Image (cartoon, rainbow, N blue to C red; front, side, top):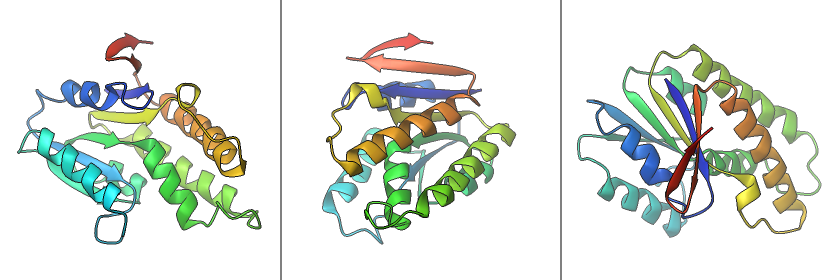
Amino acid sequence: MKVLVTGGVRSGKSFHAESLLLAASHVTYVAPGPTIDEDSDPDWANRIAAHQDRRPSHWTTHETRDLAAAIADGEDALIIDCLGTWLASQIDELDGWSAIQDDWEPKLLDRVDAAVDALARTKRLVVLVTNEVGLGVVPERRSGRVFRDLLGVVNQRFASECNEVHLVVAGRVLVL
């Protein structure tokens, strides 16, 4: 079973995604972005710590930028929170925020394809969390448009390999 959980910021999507895995005996929580060790942003470290504090103590946390490998490795049920964070870290790594860079997007889409292929092949229970691009405020500048448009592509590609898509709005869940 593979489920994509989407919604706006602070919609309750992470809580809902976590609740889907409470009965699983082994769960790996994948934080797909910069690792705390490599990132100097205290907000990122606080986000990871807050998620760790509220999750069951027997869940394992795995921080990585390599989403395809995280999906392919192991047998635990997976929760991947969140695809938007992963996308931002990939754009960062490829220097896609720079207006003078124009060759990074195909490389990014190759990474998306690799992760979606890993999702298609895995037999694991996987719950993916993402922001729904139509529900968030995105600045009307180049970086905002790039992020919004690419997150839409990412969401569609991952959703195509999922059995269910859950939309969470104000803590209410609609199974699509």
